[in-house]
Image (cartoon, rainbow, N blue to C red; front, side, top):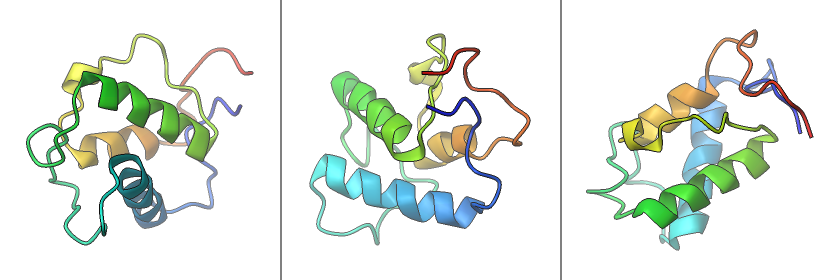
Length: 99
């Protein structure tokens, strides 16, 4: 796995589109139309703590990254918070180790 956030050629909008598709798959939603950066994970999408772990695993697989084990999932409240994690500058490392 790559320890960089995302390939430099991927725009924030492309990351967002992919993230929405991953949420649709994970949550068995009919469409991604209602998902915005302000969509709340718990209140709007009804993701529980196990769902957050599933989301992290799916995001890691989809974007070929490893989030640090000390990532505080309780601070990830909105879809935009997930997007912010993925859209950090390319020099930012997510993990010191690669698999």
